Amino acid sequence: MKMLEVKGLKKSFGDLQVLDGVSFSVEKGETVAVIGPSGSGKSTMLRCLIDLEKADAGDIMVENEFLMQDGVYVQDKKAQQICAKMGMVFQSFNLFPHMSVLDNLVCAPVSVKKEPREQAIQRAKKLLQEVGLSDKADVYPSALSGGQKQRVAIARALMMNPDMLLFDEPTSSLDPQLTSEVLSVMKKLAEEKMTMVVVTHEMGFAKEAASKILFMCDKEIIAEGTKEDIFDHPKDRRIKEFIDSILS
Amino acid sequence: MMNYLFSIALLMMDGIKYTLEIFFVTIILSMPLGLMLTFFRTSKIKIVKAITGFYVWIMRGTPLLLQLFFFYYGLALISDNPLFREALTLSRMQAALVAFVLNYAAYFCEIFRGGLLAIDKGQYEAAKVLGLSKKQTLTKIVLPQLLRVTLPSISNESITLVKDTALVTAIGVTEILYFAKARVNADVNASAYLVAALFYLVMNFVLTKFFAYMEKKYSY
Image (cartoon, rainbow over all chains, first blue to last red; front, side):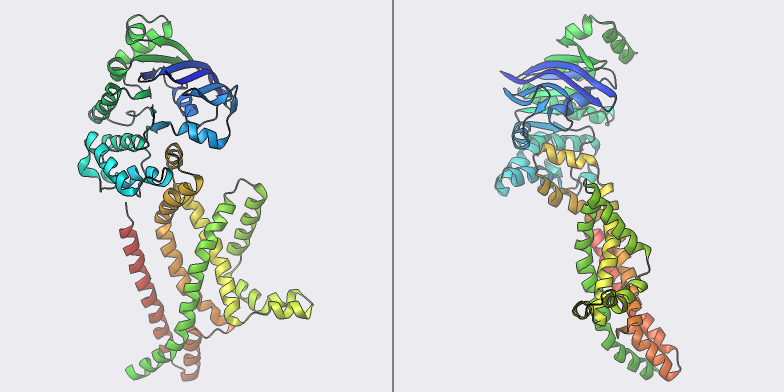
């Protein structure tokens, strides 16, 4: 089943075009890694999928429902409903600093879905255990390391029971040691067949956990395939240059 | 000597109720009003934004003392119609409260606007992807952080307000300084000023402690 289908996505900021006809699709249970040089439009593309940026043209279809058709967005209420199927994890975590870790997790389910607080707390505690942060339920985000913050952010996104998770460079602001603790949570999710789209600079993660890799460059997806297709037999010169630049 | 100072203090107790009334009414009304102005001031509707900007300019750009005089002596004179004149004639205390609330609301508007700018846009994005409505984002995410980051400025403004209450003596409200001045003139002895100063210092001491406690309580 197709979880996400994007066709001919275009986006400009003023005169600066950042996406020029991006098309791809994501199957249920797939982990898709989006890689490519900085400034190639990866993050913008991801942000368009969940309505944080408005694309100018193209189609976005989530679970066979249009979020945008021919460059026209569905009405707000419908868009909200469609975006609720997705969760998002940001590079800068964006935890709510004035709430404890536990409150960060239960805030949305309780206020948006009207879930009973006690029930939400039980689920939150279970999720915190899964990301290895049971002992941090009552602390504020400022007391956490970057890796811990990001794991809380992942748990917070999972609290809304999304069908698909979007990750916008989730480890780019972490040092290598903290990166690995976040990646291991993401790998576990991939093994559990959570559908994920991950914009990342972590080639290790792309190689190990991604079932499909999209290579973005110059406002487009210039290659799509398995890790062998991309890393071992790159068809485009730009891919080879990118891989060489990372390895050197 | 002690007896003399004590008798002055006793006399001033009568004035302290006006000082406190102006302080509390101004704080309680001007903060929500200022917050409302902040939303107008940051509105996408240009005319609303411009009118609020103009209001803030007037209120912050002219002396509070002038505004007090205007509301007490000047307001009723803007109309020739006796009915209007009567309606616009404010008592000393009414004029004082109107001037203070309107003036402080302008300052709070700018304080809260600064606080709003300090909130990371990632907070709005996180709230949005979690499905929070605009209202929920405001009440659960933005306002708590806004109040927290502006707490030091609110504290500062409150201390200024305590001292500004002394200005109303100029339109004859019988607050602390009014009595102090009367005593000094009658007794040809400056100690009444000292007693008045002590009153203000004590009030501001309590306020400082209160805000320090709040800052600690809501730190994160």
